[in-house]
Length: 223
Ligand code: C5J
Image 1 (cartoon, rainbow, N blue to C red):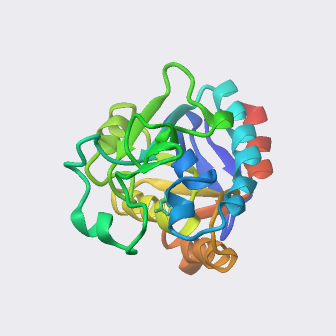
Image 2 (image 1 turned 135 degrees about the horizontal axis):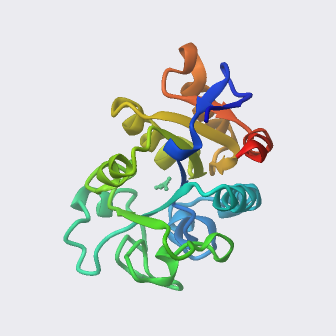
């Protein structure tokens, strides 16, 4: 079965059985106060706008039987996979690995590293723990997708121009077709949000397609 989403710069076609929904880094460390995003000097409330539409997409994708993948950016407890350059970057008072109100910042197993309450994975969904911005770098994501014959990825998550865009670029180079749901992404910088999305769909979908969540959800009524 081939479905078609009204997208930019033109229709995005996909077979639901060969399509995964990815929710990128919807973690407390980026979205809630007292996490990594705030230590970087950001207004973390800007990211909340992506939570509710992503929740709706997640529910619709679960009902339609999609493969669902959640990613988390973060590091091992002993920090062996945290590049010193990343830890030192920004000259922060509280660095990655230091103790904050939600546990050690951006460290696996800590409260801040976990997903926000509204977007917790369900049993059987795949969680990819990644040390970098892109979801393919130093993870088994490609293997997970290829084992399930996945060719298309629907992307949601934060932040638009950092981890979502890095993931789209990596996926595109590996031959996956990506559709980014614009209202399900967010940035600490509204101008980066806008330009980040434009960069993806420019030049005839140079990295991928863009649509809003309602357009995507409406196509699923045919599944
Ligand atoms: C950042 C991310 N912004 N998930 N990570 O450091 O976008």
